[in-house]
Length: 201
Image (cartoon, rainbow, N blue to C red):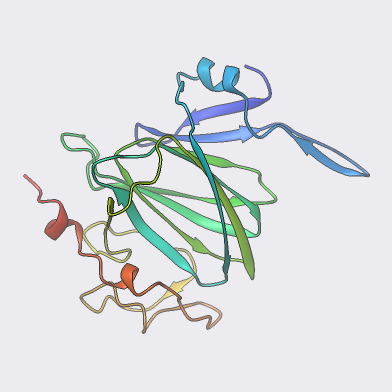
């Protein structure tokens, strides 16, 4: 392997990507993507779009997925810190409904590859976070689905979160441990839980 180390996460289809960072008194240099290293790890996906967002502390985006045109995503934080989460929605998967999360930050330079068939979301833990991701399919209008970010059936352990499940994705009674209000879009506060959207067999 070259400049990029790829490790499979505890759920198959999720990968932690760690580039080599070369630093000195001037700053640092990092190779953020290398197709040969990804190929050696068995990841030969083709990316077709790049996205970038900026969010303030307490913003939670998700949990989102694509219904008919699923996307693989390679995500990272280039400024600040986020807690990034993927939930397995692949029918027939041994880990269906399970989640995995990790901190992505400008300090640790970690990236997270999320294969097709997962819901994805992240919580901003720093004052500001800039978040970048590469995707394997184009955006298709009307194809987005979602799950309640706080569904107890999934049981995501969001760091620094204070509040009690109100029976829906409503975030009005939640804060971070320092009192920062949780900030979700109106749409993200209306997604159903996994039992309603994906029935267990």
